[in-house]
Image (cartoon, rainbow, N blue to C red; front, side):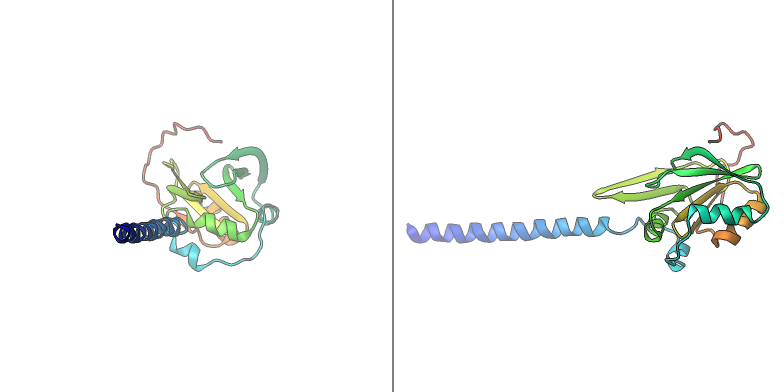
Length: 187
């Protein structure tokens, strides 16, 4: 009787250990998958990352030097990043500037922007947040230093200025929905 009881303990211990190993591997696998960005990300941003500081004030100074009228507003916009964007009027258009605490965070946030600029995804702990936008004007995303700058429009003067100051756009550049009617108010 004692011998039978000992066999049951060994068998149950093995089952417990196997179950524990399977659960541990599953949990590690889930954590591993959450640590990586969502697919369909911009290859441009990953290949051009530099940890050179560039702030909101740097952008305003440089944009003002281009002789375009630049006006910082009090308006804020939430596009799906961890920080709200500040609206800056440039000529008759506006750009939205998201300033992060450091360049690495800005780069990581830029990795969450789909190549067409219509989806922004970020991970907060075990939660993945994805925000899809239907642009009524062509979206353009730029990243430099601590900034991600978003411009929705087709004004070549503005896109040329942004490319000159911030480098090549890493996402956007295509409009899927085209209508001259603008049912959405500007921020």
